Amino acid sequence: MAVSTRQELIEYCLRALGEPVVEVNVDDSQLEDRIDEALDYWHQYHFDGAEKFYLKQKITASTLYITTPTTSDFAIGDVITGDTSGATAKVCKEYKRDVVDTEIVCKNVTGTFEPGETITSDAGATATLDDPVAVEIGTYDKRYIPLPDIVYGVTRVIPFNAASSSKNLFDLQYQLRLNDLYDLTSTSIIYYKTVMSHISLLNLELNGYPLYRFNRMQGNLYLDVNWDAALAMGDFIMIECYRALDPTTWYKVWNEPWLRRYVTALFKRQWAINGKKFQGLVLPGGVSIDFQGMYNEAVMEIKDLEDEMMNKSAPLEFLVG
Image (cartoon, rainbow, N blue to C red; front, side, top):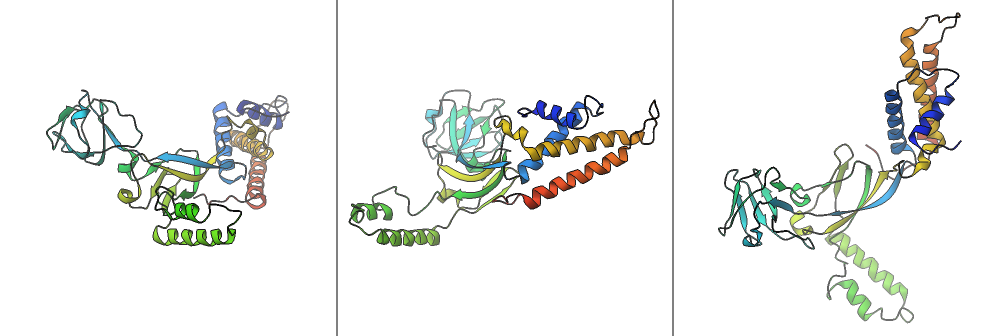
């Protein structure tokens, strides 16, 4: 029988332990906890538990929310100060962002703006902040990018300040393609390969690659770059990462053979833990259950399955930790 849902996996594992012939004394909440435990282990160490994914993240500005539509009075470059909190921010612009009259896009937020307070710019414009939400801090001021919990590891941040980007007429690649590669059938590809390797070396030496730090427990991607020079509001960066495979979307996860056996072993261990307090108790008819033996058997099965996972599976391309 193919297993395609969480509930079907629970029923499959209980049948493997003897139900309905034998009553498995494990609470439903304990079963759910053991499945979560198994999925977490499977996601981290199984070669099919995570998938390579390219995540696009936007560098966002901070936003001040005001109660009256007077944002036109605040010009780009104005410094805003909270009359009560003393917090400051600089009005800026975020590329390709639709701004409504009750929002002020800003950066370099210092201090904490208070809901409902009056703010004043150095040019004399005033407004009242919204209550209860006065400000939303963007990734530019946070100096990190929050990533979803399903991201287990980051392998690369694709460069966003490359010298080889074709943004203007003076770009090296643009000039090369314009003047030298007008016809690839009459131009040696060796020359193109040599020049491109040289450009790549120049880019690496002059710009380097963005350095980053990521820990799954924090969930934040820290870019060790000069944010003022390397990033602009509204820019996007591309993150090459591994994310956990969602079984609610990819239902074949529930039918994975190793996962079925591992969940069954976890259920058996939980059943033995629940029953060990009755160890030696004789049931009607003179029957007794060796829960300690069942526990030892389950622990050995779990160990064997985890050894199989760590020593016989294909390795992932990133280190969890």
